[in-house]
Length: 344
Length: 255
Image (cartoon, rainbow over all chains, first blue to last red):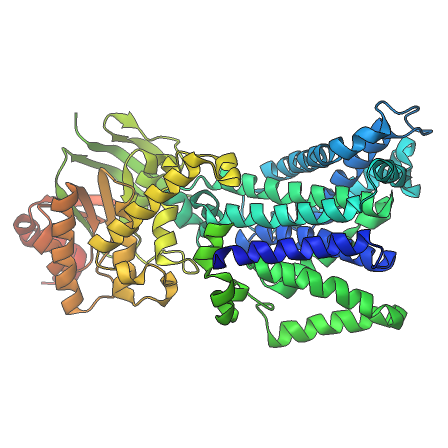
């Protein structure tokens, strides 16, 4: 029983968030923040796979998010709405209710393929190459989108709001809240499964000692590529959700600032700690919202918090540990690390 | 056909000849030693065999198959496992996970199996868990299975490293200075352990060692290396009396 309590807790949260939004008890601002928490969880935990578990340094995560965001948005708008860009809708708008998750997954897949393109050249050597290449890819993606005028260029792209409205006309439930959290849980689950399998543990071995990993039979090239594709694919999913939550995207949303936010969340939560990434995504999103009244001074306070954290807790909130390791009492409620693995 | 054969192995680091015309044959079942002063090229030879470096000239064959151009993980799959001079466990992983990861080259499931936790995945992981625990039991470190590798004392880390090599089910086991950093009692225990795993797992073992007590005790045949060249080979008794070996280790007597 107790090993299911984590799943149960997640399920309760999900019911509560969706139920309260549906009943109109949450303001649309609160709903928006809640959904961003979900998106940020996906961003931080997927980046942690590469930077934390694998020990490489990727700093262009927003680039993959942009790929996912634009792919899914273009497809949904093309399929389900009448517009100036694509003309009349290909499919009845009502079909979006069923097809939306598949389009989202397709967006993730495209982002993963772009990730593969980045991985092939950059994993031949170890070191700073990945950082430089991902940084470049972030800029390439952003500039490419800025220069494709048919999809709005720098002005951005919209119409996703109408897709979501079309879904709400069929069944009036908070669709985006539902999909955001389903995919956020899915992302956590997949990463957990990956790093607890013998297959995925290869990347932790690479982080600890790459030569030893290679000699003890880990196909390091392949392991790195798979992990990087999983990471960028999940970022693409997050991007697709982000686009449909806001209803409007522009290349300016996916700059190096966004990548930095993801990095900050990873280092705040702790490298190689999944619960740390989740915790920090929640904290980071909420702190940014609470500090909104400070306006511009927010950008003095937030970096200051980070500097203090780095000074006094270099490994982040939970470096290489999970919540249950820090608070052993939780084990009694949620089961030990192994039991949680078994449950997931 | 010999189990393992090295012929004419030569390797240059830039202009430096690290290994020159090294030859060796294992028929299978032997325990051979490779000794030599520091910098003689012993570990380089191991690295050449494992595929970390690719030799300038020469061939390495296991059961007749050439290892040229293979990646280290492919060499592992051919049945060569090794330990390292300075222990190279994965420090932040548990002892059990250290052993589990060494199963990677013969995993019977793929990425999607792991993501969907198919029955193929679950059966495979159960098997891996069982064999990993078994080998830890055999090496007498089972109690430390859930401990992080870095927290173990040195002697036990050696044992875990040997366990990790054994899980590969090697045909040829390379041990790179297994007694480095051990005290007298630990060295005695190590000699017993190596003898025992050799018999238990029916292994062919190739050993680099500085400690003469260990080498002379264990090895049937010894090869001596100096500046990348083989200066002597034979039984321990023959080696001990060989003037070139004495010279390489102690220097030439001045009359």
